[in-house]
Length: 257
Image: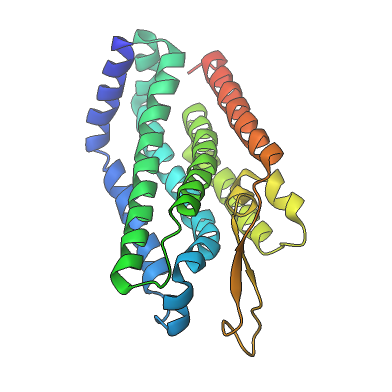
């Protein structure tokens, strides 16, 4: 355990010169500017704000959080590939421990930024005065259902970035997956598509649905309703995440670096 903590400290020291956390914060800032300051604040926004956030966030999450995962994983692992530093590191430490340490550090950066994003969004709602009580339980569940797919996506990106020396492979795979996930969110009539793609899980785990909206009246008669949690799918999500982690770690351990 002590050696693993030392590996984490080592990752933190190396990450300082790579501006990894700063890069993630910049992406978080762009996320917040896009979500909070694009469009006007109307009476409908104030009246439906708390639930409108929960309805709209899955799409923005599907755009920015996989991108953040790609950037953090690529910068964290790509630095080791240059100059064969990864080979030297694995000669001194067990490859499994190296995989885990880099994974834990990078995932911690992404999750911390995600929590900051949610904290700012909630604070913004109180500042501009969203009407109605704050649905704390619903927000807590949604935050969890945002962090879980983000963690699985990061594990996937981390594996590609640490296994392949050329980071273009990780970026290309991540971008294709992200676009497929975003596309699946625009096809609510085919929910299985969201569930098949880890990038579509933000929509598959969405807890709030919009009803009564149309082009003529817009939000005048619109209302939001909470949707039931699919326990079987949620179990499949955790199983899939564990499987991606196990396979990724096994591939890296067996690969010649």
